[in-house]
Structure formats: C-alpha cells, structure tokens
Amino acid sequence: MMEPSKRLQAVEESQTLVMTKKARELSEQGISVINLSIGEPDFDTPQFIKDAAIDAINKGHTHYPPVAGYLELRKIISQKFRDQNNLEYAPDQIVVSCGAKHSIMNVIMALLNPGDEVIIPSPFWVSYPAMVKLAEAKPVFLESNIDTDYKFNIEQLENAITPKTRIVLFSSPCNPSGSVFSKEELKAIADVIARHPDIIIVSDEIYEHLQYGQNHTSIGTFENVKDRVVTVNGLSKAYAMTGWRIGYIGAPKWIAQACEKLQGQFTSGANSIAQYAAMTAIGSPLDETIKMRNEFEIRRDVLFNGLRELPSFKPNYPKGAFYIFPDVSYYFNKSYNGQKIENAEDLCFYLLADAHVSLVSGAAFGNPECVRVSYAASTRDLNEAIRRMKISLAKLA
Image (tube, helix red, strand yellow):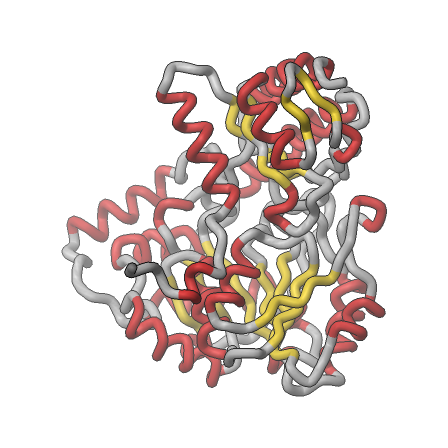
C-alpha cells in the first residue's frame, strides 16, 4: 500500500491550525466562537500598503521576480536593518521568501545534514521542531517554565552543545510566551556561541515591533557572533500582512546564496505584487504599526487581568507579541459530566465545546502544562471569553 514518506510521517500537523480549523467549523454551524487560538493580527492591512499593491498591478509588475527578491526591495530591507536594528546586511546578503516560515525552512534545509542537532528553547513556535525533523536532524530542547519567565539559563545552553550542534534557533519576542530576551541576556547567549565557531544562530525577530516598554535588540549586533547570525523577519505581524506571505533573512553571504539556490528549486521568487507592497510598507514610517502595538498593549492588560480572575490560572505577564501563556495544570485530572481533563489539550477541547472559546494546548509549544491565549481580538471578545471560561471552569471538579 502506498503511503506518505517517512520524513513526513515524523511530523505532526500544526496544532494552532488544527484548533483554528475546529473553531471555524463550529462557527460555520452558527455557533458563536471566540477564537483566541489564532496567531495573526485582527487588523486590516493599512490602506497605503494596499494602494501600493494596486498600483503595482496597474503598472504591470506581474512577471517572475528574481529568486532572492527584487533588488529595490532588498536595498530597502538592507536600510531597514541598518536604521532599526543596527545590523549591516548588504542586499546580496538578503533573501526574500514566501513568509518568515519559508525563510526559516530555507535556512534549515540549506544548513542541516541528517543527524545534526538544533538547540531550541522551550516554549517554541510549533513549526521549529517539525522543520528540523523534515531536514532529518534532531531538535534539542532547553526547558523552562513560568517561574523563569519561560527563559532558559546559560548553563542549560552550554550543557546542550555537542559536536553535532549546528544551529541555535529561537524567537524574541517569543511565540507563544511573549517573553523577551534583554540585551544582557542576548549578550550572554552570544558569548557562549562565540566559543563554538561551527554553530549558526537563527534569530526569529518577526515580533520585533510588538514590544511593550522596551526597545528591541538583535543578537546580530554583538561583534563576537555577528558573522554567524541569520536574522529572520517579515511583514505578517508588524504590518498585519499575514496573507501577503513576505518574509526575509539577513545572513552571511554564503548562507544567503545557499538559500537562494534552494528557493530557486522550491518556489522561485516570492509574489511580485506583495513585494511591491513590501517596499512601501518597510520604507514608510511605523505610524500604523505603533497604533496597532498600542492597542495590543491595552488588550494584553485586559486579558492578563481577566485570566487572573480564573481560579488557579497562572498567567505570565508578556513583554512582547500578542499571547499570554498561562499554566493551567491545576485543572488536570478534574472532570465534568464524565469528561476527564487529563492534559492541556483536553482542557482546550473542553473549553471549545462548553464555552465556545478556542485556545491552543501548550504541548504544541513544548510546555504541556500551559495553554496559549491570543489577544489578537477585540477587548469585548476578550472580556466575553473570560466570562464564558469562568462559567465552564467552575463546572470542573
């Protein structure tokens, strides 16, 4: 009997997409579902960016773009890195791809051989381990929990490094925890990696502009590792452009060339119209992004205060992104109407069925005692979700 490849069988379906799908199915049945499982801004793409795309269509920019992206866009990204991140990536060190996820996958496939190891702090974005497994390499996790603000310590990093370690991959701000590594913490990471010249740092900075009360620091700014850092970014979060599928890397030239070669066989270049929209987005002031960030900050506090009202929920107070990652282990082994809650996944399915609120199990992110709650929703929906969950949780005994 024919079946998918063993490579694919080693990878699980993204749990964030699973929960979003189930929430959508209930909504299609006419049920009022509050979806707090989704990982995208609920804002529309700013009009000036949409106008740039329409203009590009009218001007006939509808042909195959260069594999690495239009030179004009790569020059704008290069300037963005310089102005906003204090990073020096020339245009030929930049590759534009079909979203930051595609950018990371390019790097992983371009660098890893079977049996190589990739160090990934936990919690992590759901796709990181799957990407590593698709490359037939091994993810190595650095455990953390709410008591450490979901951050690993340097001793853990040092102990995890072996002769097979090829990449250290992390996001700051972090999806799912919203935790942010400080400049001092990033320097400590850089100092460890600097002693291991065969290790590449892949820094996912897609949430850089969604930070609260502090400025973003790129690990590539540290002199002792700057030649071994791949900086990943994109337009999905800061510009509410999830569907446009534009991501990019700044990388050592040899890595950029390898990613361009790989991309040439997989997708060719990213969407031409979206690239022209990206030129306008990245090349413009951050006024709309700042408005969106300020609204997210308000929502964070609304959700955090609401979650603290739920008995035995232990929410963290995130400094970035648009998620809270509470410890919900108190509810394990409780039940209602014959339905036993054995883990966070069971709790998520219970809340979806009983409260019609969609969350994602922390197991998908490496922390099975948690759930991820997105505040990419209106304050009205956030308050209503808290009200519903409070009623449903009270039924568990």
